[in-house]
Length: 490
Image (cartoon, rainbow, N blue to C red; front, side):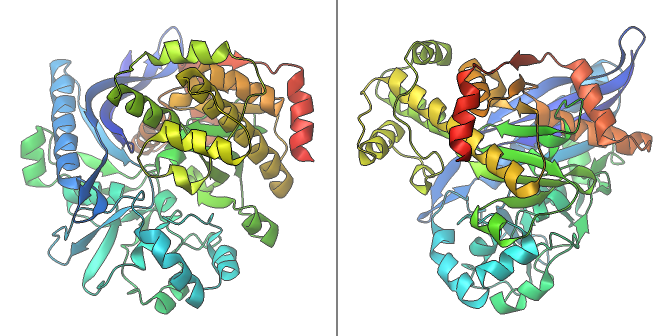
């Protein structure tokens, strides 16, 4: 198979990896895309100077190790890496001065500092005005609230995490559009910075670099980066959907347009794809967000609690000496009867790391119910709560956007969780198609590939390529699902 080779740097809030993507023409199966992991590394918040931060210096070193491994792998097979794409989580940033120095390790969205700034921001910018401009869901850790806590921004720029990595690789400062749309300072209609919001907040007009679109070239590798990684200096860094959900949605293997999606991982991003934003007051009160997708699409969605709840429980149990496999826990949870207690998976009380099982039991007690002190019961509570939240969110998204859907695509790590997928089918009353797990990396690679060939392939064409190259699992709803959905709509 003749293939082009691309490096995808894909970093989440708990781990990262560098992957090689091959896109080519197979004489038997036609066009294909495949992935190979060449480097994995942990990621997580660290306590520093009284706050929760990302260790960006360590993170960047792992990126360089991964790119060096990618270069070695390509060389061993006689191939050449055409470009590099970078995606990470959203909203967080590092401050860089005029010389390019990173002034401090970036804060994590899990730090409480954004919450303290919300009231002050809303004193000078009415929430209704903010939403009418940005279309962004209210979350206490949005970039706008984090920036409002900074004491001095003159002479510095805020680079969102994927843009900061790209800057360290190329020396070029840009802000990729899909991630810019998560800041709370981006005009959802114009697709540019909403600079009229900057002055009331005391933000310099150039606090962010200029916006770049997915598929555009950020720059080529700096000489010292090329030397450290073994990649040619002319290797391009190409902007992709640098908000990981944007890349994941670009790789949803949908065969038709009436689909909903759930990007299920540490967080769950639940919504539909639209051509234009929904900026009305009803949408604001429902706390839906309008984020940019690849090709100027709108990801109309809500952030919903995610598998962070489960991973934190497992971490707590392991620290207490109980460390069963996830498969064992899920089997035990699946054996429990339906109709058990549930929690509000979106409660901000679950954002920070702590004793998650006890916090979940406490939340159940607050509802007047009792959750047995057994891991399987806690797991079932988490997954039932997520499935209910998914169904409620999708029903509301359809109502507010006017877009009706017939199938739900679950991509990301949660697509491997068979119990969660079945519960979601039951709760929504819709067919669920699960997979691919690596949707984010696939979307990253395919945007690079399209840029390299300069062929205008539509998102539909990219999605067909993902579908033909992936093993997908389908889940059909139980009869009770339709009744459950009707209850949620009432």
